[in-house]
Image (tube, rainbow, N blue to C red; front, side, top):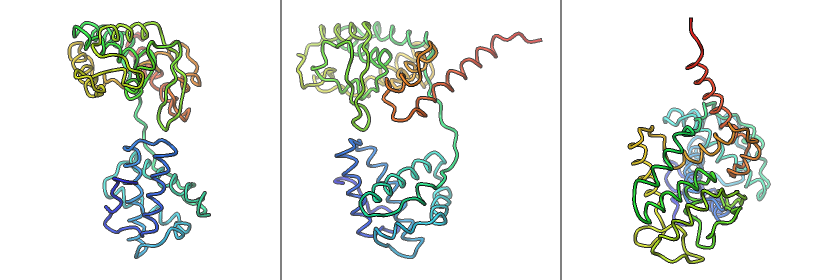
Length: 314
């Protein structure tokens, strides 16, 4: 893939393996819609794996030899990465990268990926989402509406309202163009991997965006970004992060009160109100239900906090 360095390992993979890796990255980008950051992470994981194999086996080999990767090879690679200081979570991600690459090779070069696909990854504790409380989320939205006057304040309020009311990622909110205005009852959002989903739009979000558009000095153009920076270009997500930083300092909220925490709050509060887990998965655009299930652990943890704080003690 153009712009990605595939030569960084101490021992280089063979030219054939590097060419296969480049084709896979092109496939991820062009067909699967993977972001440049995702492709770069995959490239790093595979570059290190292939480089390790070359060194471990005494020299670089072709693509076909990947069919002979054994459990012993995989255990040695994972031990090497652990010794290098890679965390269990990062190692699990690297193994997932290797599995995806081998699965892709299997479809094209008749490589049997069974050994790699059946390899057990390291166990690790998943980080739970860190949502705001209902009151905290409402305080942030209210603060956004009062912190700055004029169209900049209206813009920041509109974006954060979309994150909390619709559960959007910041990239999804800032990816909206003028074509989305006025906001419909249901938005069609293109999320990670190009996957599309339908998201209901609450009146409060529609009104916040409409108010921003009324005050914005730049015209709404069908193919231009809906949310603009001060000079009229696309709004940088860092500016929303800074607005959230200022809000949490004013309100005394923890450092986890970020724009993405508003999306977590959307899911957690919806679940606490009786929302169906499958429906929440669809609204968030999660590919796997297991990702959404993390919010059930958050809900249970909050319940235990309330129990511990309120239960009478002898």
